[in-house]
Image (cartoon, rainbow, N blue to C red; front, top):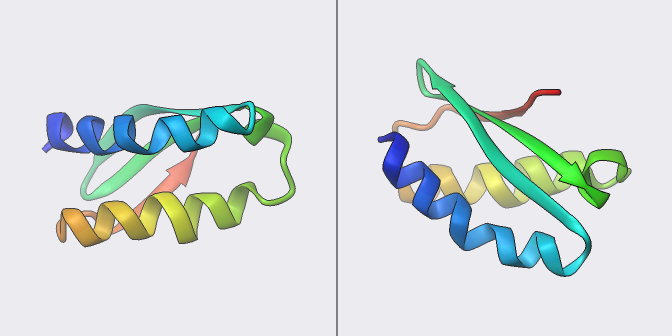
Length: 73
């Protein structure tokens, strides 16, 4: 599952990079995907929307076993 999640994150990254941000996979625990938002995304007021409505929604659609996505420092 980790490899599939990494592949999906790699598909999302170019969109974030266009705005000066990025995302990296930190780990997966019991269906909870832990990522680190970096660059412009790290301090952006919209980062929670990007995380939940963008990344989490996309991962859950593609991998039903994903329960949620969390940003870790």
